[in-house]
Length: 100
Length: 473
Image 1 (tube, rainbow over the protein chains, first blue to last red):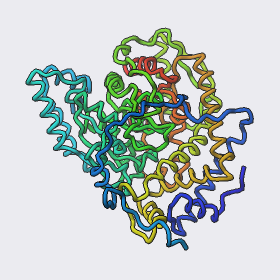
Image 2 (cartoon, rainbow over the protein chains, first blue to last red; image 1 turned 60 degrees about the vertical axis):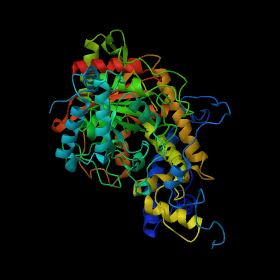
Image 3 (tube, one colour; image 1 turned 45 degrees about the vertical axis):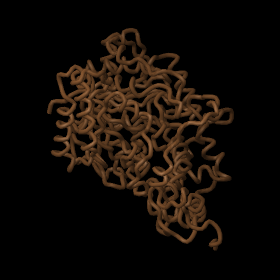
């Protein structure tokens, strides 16, 4: 089991998750996540060495359909619910050029 | 208040002896009288509902064939997409969003003549066990407004318990239908994974989520399951088979069925709940079932595995809320800054906590220690159930360790809140069927729910047991 989660790790995970946490939130989250992960140590009591992970409760093989055109969502209706749209596309802020 | 059941409404409206508009107006009157103190809904769609009820009444009058749910009033958890009708997941990040399509379940209900009354409150993105985590304020339990209705589908449970609609739908990822059903004295069903389409259900834990009904009777739940279940090509995890026949098995009784009692059940249930569970075993025995002891040694590890698996899946699913395609955007100088600011402003504390836990559990260096191990525990639980179901046809447990608790009782300690789901979570991990049936009352005269568990696709057996418990209660 890894070391208890550190404040630095919490701050790094917040960046990975694209969540701008306040300093107070990082503090609180460090305590709470450490508590939950500590609880996870319960499973150390189990021998899991020969156990296969279960990803899907009811396994299905790949589900394919014929590659034929079907009606899709109405573009104007979809773009109409976006925060910003222009020329039939989603409009976003600059993607590059402002990295610190 | 006289309660109209789904079956009564559908039968009488189709026969022309009751009008859909009459049913709807009764529900709207109840909403006017009590919704201000209950807060079951994020949105009441009274105008649309009146139009729909009038259409159905006109069809009946004109002698046209109407659906199996003609005039049945239904509330929908606000994480199911409804075309052109605001769908929020009780989150600021989706406030104001109107989906461009209907969820498959919504379409199937509408096609059979259901009348939608509104969108119900939930713990934000279905993360919680009390509906205290909604960005729009908590829902109160109609049986005692100082207590929670359970969660996360608390609004859907409260809507039926308060007589705001004949039935409602919720989603169950770790108990979010069964636990509020128990706390509000209702029937609540978590179908076998893949039996009901998830298309249009805003995803929380994709390998765990299922939609299911809240009703006042077992027969109502059986009818609604027959309408919503069955293969959907739009959901790639939908099982390739038709809806089960459930309404026809309810009178079959339980003679000859083997009912499992979990000998090594996790501790912590209150005595009033355990007394009702004992009474439920007695009732089934008296009706001709045998009670057998089974063991589920990994059951108590379910909670631990779930609180890694569900947040991991949620952290991935909720990545789509980024201020680009729908909902809230907080403007910032570049795209990354916009993502971070939007998500910080749009998500509440519990959602942030689970995204953080899930992101951590999936991140490089920690995957094997946490997520990988959790998936192995999930296998052990499924194996335990397989062994148990070799000896019995269904298993009974409490649904919730206690009756409805008071507001604020568990909000300061996330782990205490998570323990509400100790009996419900293992089913989701295994992908099996389960339902809660009201079976008498406990502390303070509040309802106690008994949980009936059955193996995957064991719905017919599960409903037979549930119907017997209903007859005995």
